[in-house]
Image (cartoon, rainbow over all chains, first blue to last red; front, side, top):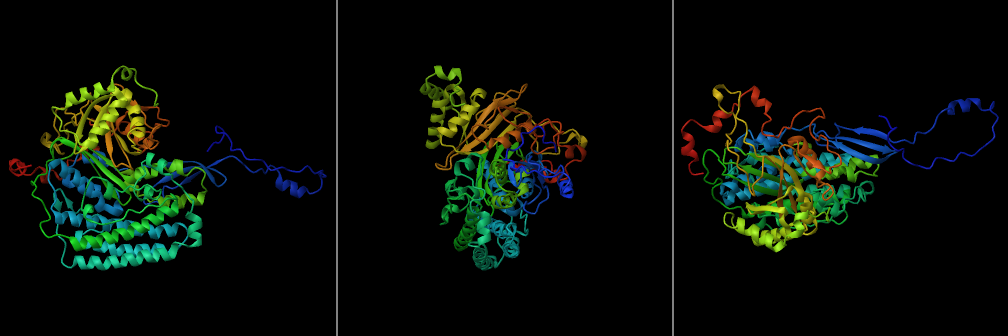
Length: 402
Length: 235
């Protein structure tokens, strides 16, 4: 790519001492050095679209001065599926299947705000048992998402073992989700007004056992990575997001809590699911760097497991489906519902005109805004840090491209 | 930006405007919550007659502002309402969806949309609108702001100076609706290839997959003729 139209990065040129040399002597050396000048111009490097640090296809075009990033431009859209358009052509039950695929690591959590929006406009409420099961499954998908992150972050700094631990332990959680919903990744379990099925026999005991595995798994990650010299060197003070910059870019979820913003929609948003009945702590970290993001997610994984145990103890009996008409027709109106998803704030602005399908659905996905800070965040970092920063922001491309 | 007050706003008493807005709206919209009312009052006090209309949608405050107050509304929201967090900026096309053309017998292979143009909460002056949501991470409130966009020359003021995160949202809105944003530094395609023609989220842009093949789930959705009323009657 041409570098002529851009100012060449300024850097003090090496001072070559003037030495009088006989031109005949050392000719072989002079030949070798002839016209060899270090190019101090900047260089454009293309990262991606395929890279293991990205869940999907994210392309990053960075302009480099040596190893330092001058400017970064994320190129997205490789997985754009046009969900906002598709929702205008589908009835509500089919859209639930569709939005499973937005953030595919925590599909169940995607369904909840959409179903909530439809329920609010229709003026119905899911029965308490369904609400509890929804909350449990949302927290389980959070655990599954975060355990993968906790392992994979190790991989990005060169530690293979945590990655295998991550995949191994996530499988236990996915088994539990599969046991209840029938789907490992795409449960498609929510219905407007409740859930598709009740829990199978023995599921609660199985879920309790799995939470023990989760606690053990978190301890493993802590032992392996926290305090590890290489891990700390690669993550401490790398990719710092100040709180005010983060919020103005719309960074949410664990990423903004790692910058010291004490804001969790489970506690601070409109009351949704059963979070008002659960005693839990919102973890924050003041540093805002990659390490803080890892630390916050580690604590949140444990907190979610504790929440699941509390919810399992308190789960009420009763029906799992409210009385809803066979054909879902949502009355005219508009509704904004936001939830705290594993990756951050997920929201749907649902505009209905009284039909069997929405008139307009604005899907506010967390990763989209979390990644939009990259051009700001990557300025001045070194190439190897790009990878750890990307990994610590933790995004799913389906959640960006929609 | 912040000192760029619309000339109309200077001559009007803020309190007067608030009362006028309440008088006009009090009859039809349900009363706002205490927190929402306080937000609206502060917004109206700063923007003057920049606030056109307000409404309540599922407990949230929706405020429609004049197009020339759009950027100022953002800076007021950020500085006066402590809404430090930008949730999204998006567009909407209120035109009724075009009836499906390709299916045999002219039957629509999509959930039927009403053919009349009805505008949502807080109304609209025309076909296009830009709406955005800002929130406070400290006080946990939020407000949805809307502004009208002229159909013949769709443009709105950019929020990038106030909320840098609006950059990608506005690029998306521009490519999906063809609404350009004045003051946006870099308005180019976000999702779609740069040679893409058209604006896919406009209601007159057909979903090509449906043009080719009618939706097989149609029978499931609509149910047998006649059973629709019986089933959906209590909705």
